[in-house]
Amino acid sequence: MQVSVEKTSELSRKMTVSVPEEVVKDKMESRFKSLAREVKLDGFRPGKVPQHVIKKMFKDRVREEIAGDLIQSTYFEALQEQNLRPAGYPHIQPIDESEGFQYTAEFEVYPEISLQGIDGIEVVRKVASVEEADLDAMIEQIRNQNKTWALVERPAQANDQVWISFSGVSEGENFTDGKVDDYPVEIGTNKMIPGFEDNLIGLSAGDVKTFTVTFPEQYGNAKLAGKPAEFEVSVAKVEESVVPEIDAEFLKDYGVLDGDLTTFKEDVKANMERELRQALRNNLKTAVMDSLYANISVTLPKTLVDQEVEEIIKPYVENAKKQNRKLEESELPRDVFEEQARRRVALGLILSEVIQANNIKVDEAKVRSTIEDMAQSYERSEDVINWYYSDENRLNEIRQLVLEDQTVEWIVERAKVTDEKVSFDAIMGKK
Image (tube, rainbow, N blue to C red):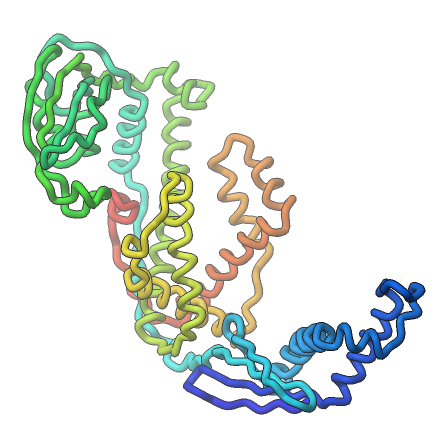
């Protein structure tokens, strides 16, 4: 086997592999002998078909099969011989030769990545804690999540729930498929388009109102985006919220069987602290990734970027299939996702280089503690832990996450880190 490699661009390679004719002939002869034992032809006993007949009938097919086998057996051997690491699948093209067998394989290789400058990169680390005011706000939120609704005989006001029937028309076309009946709207949640909920304030049961509001420019339905619409609304009933008191019964429903308020607060705070730790880790990881992406230059294989774009688009395509509709190319322009894909590919390559260059190994104790931490939010935590450890694929997903976290920790230890004190709400995305 002879191998030559041509560098066609910084990352593109064209590898030519040549196999001598005697190797091809030997493999073909072996295949002809096998066929002679297997082929059944009229006029010949099984296994007695002459070689010249076999060769005449199957020469082209056998040579094509041998070509496929040779590509499979020599491609990776040639890569190893030339010390090449292809990124993605190759484009393989056989070359017509009167003697022997020859083919070209065109592919991109993984880039050489210099980690020079990774020591001392600047990272801002957010620091936060659960304060008493945060705990009080969370308990109030829990109360509101358990609120009930009571019928009132008065005009609707902010935070009320109004049951309505409505229809909508834009540019002379009804877009609500007639009328929507018995639809609850909680005023102030902003789940309806801007201005809709405000128009319900002051209405009582039995009232009918017509008003015009404009759909947002970025509305999901392109046909309605940015356009005015006229709604006709009729009110069936108005309800006000009833927020439960934190009494023994409430605490038992929440899982505090002894009805002790202190126990309840401790449980809530423990959950908040666990979520905060995870949020701070995620925030730090994002800060490290941002700094790596900005400071480590990587030439990206187009093949990997294209594959990553496909991965990003996949959920949109699957969602469209569930809705029995076909996505048009204009709905998913590749350039919209390309920068996100480039970032993912670059960071994946950089982290992989850091792991290999510094021989970072996954810490199984951290894998265990990560799974245990995840399981704490479930009632039967031991079942969750066993669920992960019963499947190697699930366990490997956690191992990969832990290895990434360990790599981030390794980088942070060598970075110029500036701590920034922030509030619980700020880090949890509530402000």
